[in-house]
Image (tube, rainbow, N blue to C red; front, side, top):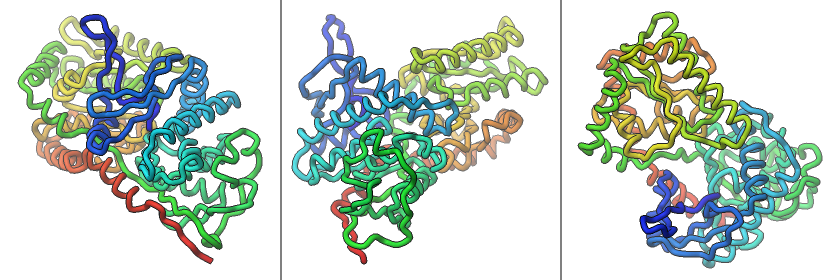
Length: 496
């Protein structure tokens, strides 16, 4: 179950409307597993105010969940992306708290749970994906206690101090605790969640296991669906238990399962002659600079694009880098352009690009090439191959798969990855140049080091990075999670 289905609408050559599989990493990871196990994918099909019956695409059964225009505005753009997204990303932007947004979120989560409960076979396994559906596990468990339920959070989970700002914090915790296994990108995210449960719910936490009482009379606990409203979240934290609860408790595991990429597909594309030729053509179009710096991001305030451009501009201003010697390419795919904060970010970045270009461009060499587009994976691999240095400067990120894609696309052991320590990828890609993107001087030093790094040092680092990405691909992520979920089915602790 995910907010979106595994397919997108397409217009065929004859003008008819059809479907094609989405290119995202989640679909790549899960579609083969579902096809081999007769699974179903539950999600919204992308069109507002449109009701579709379940249908098949290839070997996959798809169950569309209808969303109205109001649902999209309040549940998705509102609570999911106006409240949860900024709160879970360290309040880089201010979250908004509106009761009608949460009510829409609760209503849509209930709809997802009901659609899934209707189609899931007896004793089926359900894997719920991401922050838009955090109330679903408990709702689904209430509807179908026979199910095995997993949940994976693709974005960060905030420290308890930040999470406590959410007026509906207890509802979210109760919702997630309906799962048997809750996965996070980083060990720190899983720890944040366990601490929030321990502090707010009073449940006993032992290593990665949370003891959820099967029955309780505490007003802040209630039944799995109790508290899915604003009123139930008014109040203070409950008393924290320092020992396992008396009686039976359901054990819920919360731990890290870092997601990865479809490494085999990326490496195969990097061997294609047309893509190799395209990567060489890209460098020619940039004036054949000695070093190409590359940033690839969704246009979002969490990605640190402004910090990256500020560091680059200062290096040009002080003469540490010169146009012709170096060129920056920034791909910023459109994102939420109807939201005011994103529109302002777009304007600010475009102004910065214009200032850098006006001051430093020459007739034959651009200082910066800004591309506000989305590109197919073939073009992205060509860009990765053309770039000498990859700049990933996110201020907060669940994983950041671009960093792993860059490593997978390198045909030799060349190329340097500059990587924010505030990404999940930093936990695995330790041989990158790890930086604090808030420190512009540190970022500048890392860019300079990357452009002048000894080839032997660069080769050793990239070889280590490639080994990690190849051995831990997206299919291993999915298999590891589902295997562990199967081991946890029906685990009950009886203590006291």
